Length: 141
Length: 141
DNA sequence: GATGCAGTTGAGATTCATTCTCAATAAACT
DNA sequence: AGTTTATTGAGAATGAATCTCAACTGCATC
Image (cartoon, rainbow over all chains, first blue to last red; front, side, top):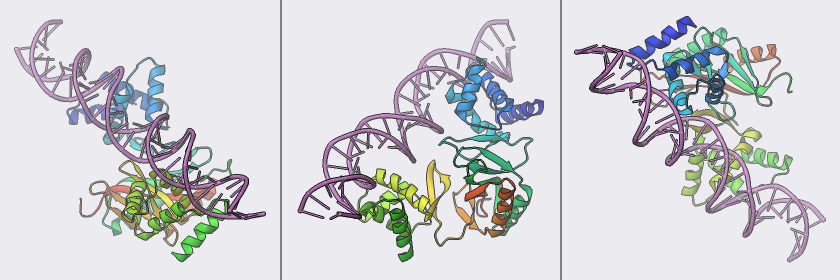
């Protein structure tokens, strides 16, 4: 968490953005407990701690966190954009259950290697993987 | 196209759904020219041919086409859900350019095999793959 | 530690894709 | 052809995400 905060601070500074209280609160919420989260999750989580921040600000701040590389956009869920940590988290695949909404994470590196090769063939420079599948988890089949 | 229509008809029948004019018009539009399309594309395309169908009906029909296996949901684009053909189209990966929006399709089967294996390890039953990456195409780097 | 100036925030309005409602209509079976 | 039942169209409703703008706050300077 120390390190994340510093990365964030540096990122903001490098963009001439201010390290405001709402931005800190949001980033703390992001790193507090969630693996996957959406804007509403953050809003509720922050509210519980009585450090209220408006939804608008969260919507404005999340893209900064993405740009800084601390989180990234993940699969959508229930027609909401959802996000996940990247800093300190290996890339992984998502298996998302169509029935119960559970997200299962699985290994990655072999798949990534293959994809990297295909991208190379197309002279395409990857900035972010988007790998997974929908279906039914073992409990819902 | 002959075959698609029959598949569709059979699918509808198997679900006790009627083969209505709007459903036919929509399915013809889907198979007329697009590789990737969204609801609005279909609406405009149908309008051009003076076979008007309401947006509501298109929104209601597209999920049927998905369920029948003729098309599938693809990446979102410009905050719209987009769809692509599956029938008669190999699965493939998408490389989507963050700069110019171009979608590059690439091979698939090796990646799919790997993913199938991972899914099997999790006892997860895949109904639809979602594979790709964002980045910059060779023209935009 | 007061001052000034951007950049930032909050609240509510707005946008826009998607879904819903319901009366009118059409498929399909007898 | 008549009956039943699903389907359609038009517009209203929903809801996530974005925008607006006046009030506010980091933060650099004195």
